[in-house]
Image (cartoon, rainbow, N blue to C red; front, top):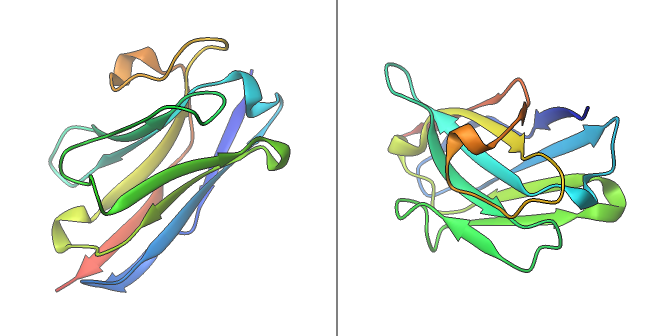
Length: 125
């Protein structure tokens, strides 16, 4: 069982940047494909980005491609989401998630077993 804790959210102006972190405990993250998802008020949770266990393959939602970068440092048991050129429509609670071990990354929310509590990102216009 792996526990995930997100941090790094906050309030930023449009065009600004934030870096979210997802720290794991209980298990080494190096065996897990990881994803970031977000949920805006009144909307369903949606896929943002995902990364394979070794960082070799990444996936992005079209809405964030070219602006967001997912990365991982397995030695620190942490996954990151660098968010640049933020827009008001990026406002949401951001969640990190882990698949069961030894599986490839996925864009599908139901493929993820472990979830953090989320961190709020608010982008003002």
